[in-house]
Length: 478
Ligand code: MN
Ligand code: MN
Image (cartoon, rainbow, N blue to C red):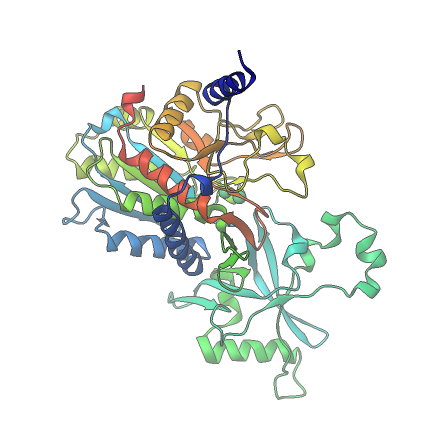
């Protein structure tokens, strides 16, 4: 064979049989590129409004109602329903043509993110400054939370039963709050000689909230008293009200574009609101699907899905029961179990992308990369697949074919090297119902930090992937 012909033939064979990954940007038409940037604007707005799980539920409900979803038990609900659970979890469903017992299609994401919660008795004074004590929630690197503007978001239940929602530090004219750090001049023994994880300890994550004393110079704890006086006069709060409150400290400020080309998004809480928003958009745009489509938005994933608003609660069963009633399907325990067992699900959660500066913790051939599309993760867990959810090859095959046939740019990725660490998602808690489930979401850099990075192209592909999954008949691939 002449050399140039041989070269061509090699290229043809390679093209045909070798696995390749594609940068989403290389695949997009100019029309799609515009869609990518438009989608990113909507997503950033969602992030700015939904900085806690409670705020996310409010935003999701607002978006859902705008596109015709109705409360599950209302008489006017017709094919598109939603159900809220304790203001911290919500599910949206679009009724499909196939009988429910043959299974639903479910995309499940979580709307809680790592943060600092206020303790129940948080306010104190030290060296004529007032502080709030915190207890961190989820996996944070504590050193990332000092010396940055923080906002207070949350709910307080007063003694008379009245509720107060607060959101302080997001408006330009609001004050912000912050955690102090030691000056480098004095940090040698107290911090530098320690391990990074011990240098800042949980009990020192105290938030500075004021410094003006109560006017009566004879009073004790004048700074604390002045803050309490302000809280009472402004919100009608007394110190005991903190006990029945859930106040979260999150990084203050809005989602931002990153880079000269503005191709990336930097924001707090993208784990997992990038998948939550993508699935919200996807389910909002489908109608009359083959199989009933369900988007679930759950809480408490970051602390192991513990609690009554988490993936371990019976919220899933309850919302599916409501869909049964909606569609006039006779509901008994066995049909409900069958419907769940025959379902196909995506655990819509982010994955850690290959970090250019710390490539040693990843296994390059099996790591997700920013910009290469939505990431399929066959299994999660750590060590010898401990605490894993491992999708069946048959199901991975179905998803792969579905994505390939619908021009979804996707990649596959495992979080890190085998013995390096690991993590899980809600997948294993839904898997207990017997359904097929696979992890599929957006890769992030600086994951779990106060400023996580995503690619606008990946966000768009995530939304496209969920939409294809929820709208196209999946059973043809069986
Ligand atoms: Mn997550
Ligand atoms: Mn997480």
